[in-house]
Image (cartoon, rainbow, N blue to C red):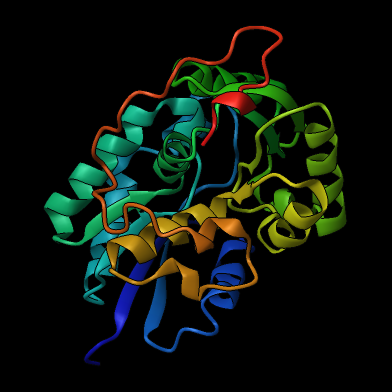
Amino acid sequence: MAGVARIGMLTPSSNTVLEPTTAAMLSGLTDVTVHFARFKVTEIALSDEALGQFDDAEILRAAELLAHAKVDVIGWNGTSASWLGFDRDERLCERIEALTKARACTSVLAFREIFSQRNIRRLGLVTPYTSDVQERIMTNWGAAGVTCTAERHLGLSDNFSFADVDERRVAELVREVAGEGCEAVAVVCTNMRGARMAEPLEAELGIPIYDSIATTLWKGLRLAGVETSRVQGWGSLFADDRSAGSKAGSKLNPLPPAPRAGQTGAEDRP
């Protein structure tokens, strides 16, 4: 159909949140369609078996199937690079683009871009993951110049179970980390119910709330040339159209150094 932007999403097989949430976010955009392909992901852990789920070969097979639908963009709607390293998603985007000729993006690279653009250096982190996975995420972000000044995690590893954490509990976790002091909160997991809570929590807490499902769609829309401000009711992320259409897999400018102890960093923000 002429004039329709098609966005493909690579989806963990046991995820039950991201598809209905993405569809809800796009419900007012009749000129954008979203299409999903799954590959096996059932456990989030640091074991060899769990890490092997994110082998590029499986993901690329799913991406190839999405390309049959002639999608304009293919997004990896998962957060594995948050503990495996940004380079995993950078390489994956390059391989998807070479294979499918569609533009590629990921949730984690979108997070990094958002934090860089908006000068976020003190982050509150909310996940359903285990302690060791959480530590890996915090280390990875710290190396990129973003300090996790507060965090909450639920100690879960069964990917399907993440969806059983209701919105009220997610909101409680966000409030807790915000109360410890941070410039923004990231809900990192695309099978967690954070997206719908972003806008009311932003109004309540006065800081941005960034959800993983939302960041994937935000970047996908940009790459497809669709104004993100048309997505309304899902938080401040979509209201800002800076750098629309920039290439997902490219290296970003380094983030500025984190503030010294005792500084909030707020005085340095625009």
